[in-house]
Image (cartoon, rainbow, N blue to C red):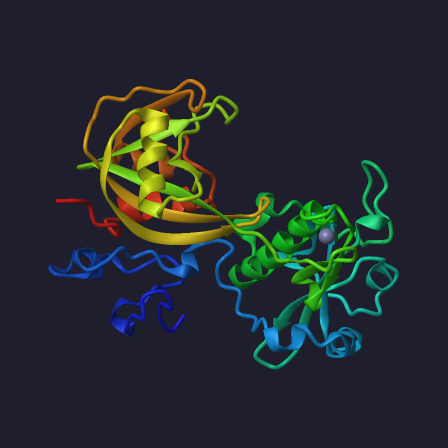
Length: 350
Ligand SMILES: [Zn+2]
């Protein structure tokens, strides 16, 4: 890539193949480590949606229908929340069909307008769950085309397509949970290219929800606070996280969640990066926080365990060489933040 969109960096500090700055740049005195956290959007799975969402077209139902019918337009089918993928040598890629494809054309659900690419080609997604048989997938597909749960292939996908898939997945999750009006219980009808719902009974408009979640790198010098939940795979530990509650700032939520889950007090909080996480509607807000206490008191209702662990051991764990812990899987923002931290791309606290 030519530069880092999230930091407006010059070529000198540009991200290389989505892996962050070079070791030479990091080692340079006065380099970026002292300036700001260096986590680029190109490192964040589900970021990087390059489509122009073209909001001005959404309200124009005739334009939406015309674009959908255009043979050059591209449509991504989702089946029970799973996108259709083409499996090739380069890894799973979203399968883009035309709206005339029988898989798309016979569906009862209105399409979601995802936006226009740089060439003006319209992209849509369509829910084809009507094709489903219990425990079965649509039979007409070739072997190289398969519906796959997004989380299982997110780290192998083309980066830009993860962002597109996140938008579609988020809309379908919202639509599934908001078929009826929260005001009067009437039936909602989809409008605006799939980005609004209007109650047929009372006329109230409903908009897609995004639920903010804080996820935090709590630091005590060169140690980080990790926790695990009982339901997680054996030995998996990750950053603490939790939903922001009404009336809270991001900083408030970081301090409250860490205190509730581990008993640790957090002082200064800094924002690092974010990740759309459409399972079903989260926006992960990655932060760093300075620990003001060290004694861990785990709330057994929230966590099974919480530990302080050193940077060298985290580096081992990220390379699969640690016997004590396994970090979150590739594609999860917790892993991206930990990776950046062990590479000294996240400044500590003085
Ligand atoms: Zn209503």
